[in-house]
Length: 94
Image (cartoon, rainbow, N blue to C red; front, top):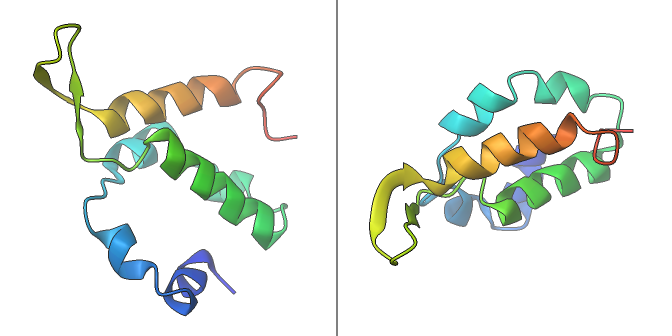
């Protein structure tokens, strides 16, 4: 069973597709699906839930120090952070 079918089964697909941006995630982590192949489905799903909670798919724009909206999208910053975290020994995938 793939992650997509799990979303459909739980009626979460519409909320996922609204206001999501996968471009930066795919750019920063192009081989993530291959990296996750050896993990159980539940752990793969948990990884994507973590990425989502971190903001890797968000379309929201980042605010500057004065609270003013910038042109930078949260997904760009979050995906870059996740990519860097996965390169450290403490956060690597096993």
